[in-house]
Length: 308
Length: 164
Image 1 (cartoon, one colour):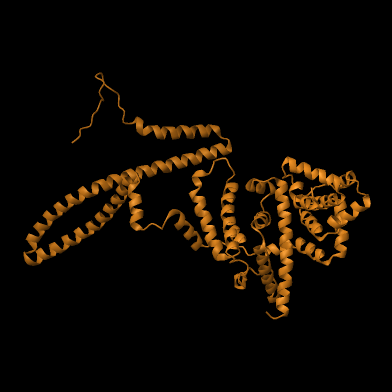
Image 2 (image 1 turned 90 degrees about the vertical axis):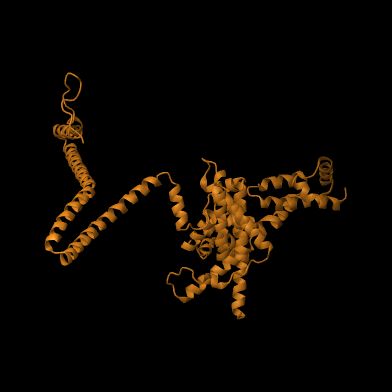
């Protein structure tokens, strides 16, 4: 094998990329040619410097195995590693996060004493966190968020889209019923006052045009009619109000009982606590028990209220 | 996410677009997310792919390097006086230019380790390489960045002395 061929394939040889017959030829040539052996040594040193943790000892043993004198090896090592700016740069980069080997650190220090450029690089590397702080931090503003939402979820829905979406919900019927009830209540409230105004104006017109007596008669008729109508309107409202008051009383009673029970628990007065709990239970059960009446011999209730 | 995009591309408008793309991609990929897997790793892997693609494309298009100085005008200042502000602005410009000269792998290593503060293990998981490789990439990237900073520092000094 010619030396030129050896040099051409040297990199692939060192990286183990050659196939077997070619690899064997390269081994033969390295063993027979001192000049190419030195080349291998130099290339190995450069390559190993790219990878952290490679032992110098392996280079030395390889050089000795090849029959090179120690002086040649030291000169080669000095040229390819210790005094080389590239080598020192790599060691500087490695030394930022964790300490490097003492021997390597000594060589780096020796090199830095002579090389202003590497000293400056070391300073810059040590100042990197300060440099990083100069890069501004961006904040996502409202417009950015809106754009992202538009691109992911589509455009912002309009009023009718919201309405349509709401209508598709299963609970929307209940919500609609509640809203309608509230609207109806508001409308009734208004209609009462309107009805009263209309009635007052009607009475005035009748009194002016027909006479006071007829107006009184008409007025009493209208009164009874309107009272009946208003009574019909107000009955459900009265029932609701009564139920509401009853519910509120129950809630107030329950909360005061709970408060008392909590206080008893805190003070350790268990007898009072038991009493309060019995009271609460009694209050809850009382409405269920009261309607029950003793049954007669036929099994029917003693008193069945008449209903119309 | 916005800052990750900015640290990759170094331009506000592009960073906004890129961050939006990342969010859209995350949203579209939600169904592929495996419960139990680290959410951050999954999110970073998607963001990283988009950022790297964008960075490579940008470098290929040769639209890189000179970020306008106005970009840095609204840097948060801490009332250190005008000289300090000018210095900070110069620093911001130099670091941005230096970052723009890095290769995609080096920039990625710097952004993830030094800006996003990911651990070596997280980076190894994300990049799918051994921790030793991650370490050497970070170290090489820092040296590369340091050299670029030195170059741009000298260049800025020369520009100032020539009144450019």
